[in-house]
Length: 394
Image (tube, rainbow, N blue to C red; front, side, top):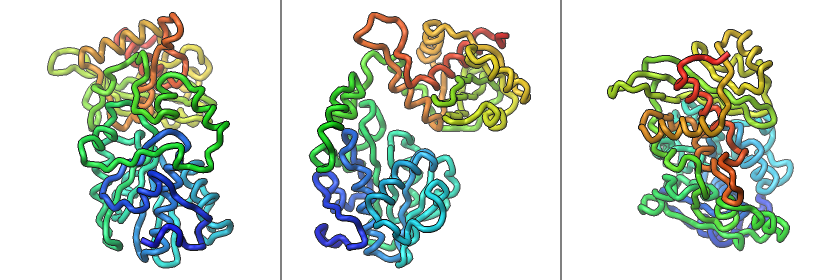
């Protein structure tokens, strides 16, 4: 690779430091670059890819997140406003939200994708794959992507994961500790453009957010409501025969979340729940949810939104008011976790992220969890309580 001081003039001025610099020279097959917020991890990855794409003809690079939509205002903004020159031919054509790739004059291509359209990305071969916010994906996703490192336009293949730290049992940090993945810890010193005001804001965070985003630690939330939630997640499979059930938490500015699954009789003669459907989206009207939700389910929904329940009912869905006692609902979910009768598909990524963060406030003598980042957790409560009560509440 060209010396870093000689990065092509078609790129805006950039000099990597620390983990970012190490990434430029690293040729290991699997790489994790992690650290606090604002340390320049994403910038380093897109700068390296841009340099490779200029230097090596006909290589194929894949950039992706859990969903393609989530990359539009994050990774692509960084690339188009900080890396390529203003007015570059690379940014011509489709609007950023509709862009599917970047084509270089030498035949190289950067493909943009999300795991919400897995067929498109898994049908191709790549030299480099970059997964941004990699804590959003599963180990199965990661290993399936590794099988796509089969293009041979440069001297090595590489798959890069970028993230802020998550809980200490997350598969990413465990894979790095096992030696299967090279780890490049980034620090604030790696990003000379970071401001004291930004650092002060991060330092003012509390609990596990401060530990992860300011200290760069893989830390569990103090006082987790569901400390063993990880044990519920299973490899995705087709729904088993049984009763179709679901829970809904309404939202517009905050996310709307619907969780769908199957209640079925297990070999132990107990009723098991397998949750395999997740819709988690903001800025969408109830009518669009009515069209998107799978048919045939019995849904238990947030009772504080009776008009929304009626609208879904008019669209043909069977929806009733959920029981909204938080403590009873939390205990019902915990009981199923302890009994091994709650199973959640690894594709329910928003639910997984919330379960890993849902916590009690250690500074307050309250029996209820902190009321934030809990939309999927609420939908889960409604679903479990609905099944356990055995009827649709009206």
